[in-house]
Image 1 (tube, rainbow, N blue to C red):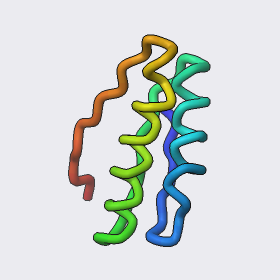
Image 2 (image 1 turned 90 degrees about the vertical axis):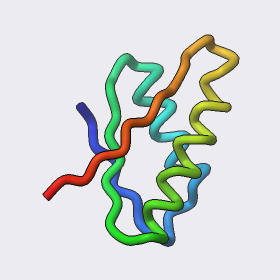
Image 3 (image 1 turned 120 degrees about the vertical axis):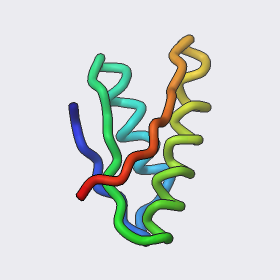
Length: 68
């Protein structure tokens, strides 16, 4: 599984492009975020990647988890 680190200042569309590219190449992706701003950007990026991948017939799902 590939990890994508998302910061509060990350551009959600750029992160979505990275996520979409990895998924298209058959990889599973996990986002890593710390703090409210970075979590918001990660959720936005996941939502955008769903839109990017929809025309290809690829469904993106999300499973939130806390990791210590």
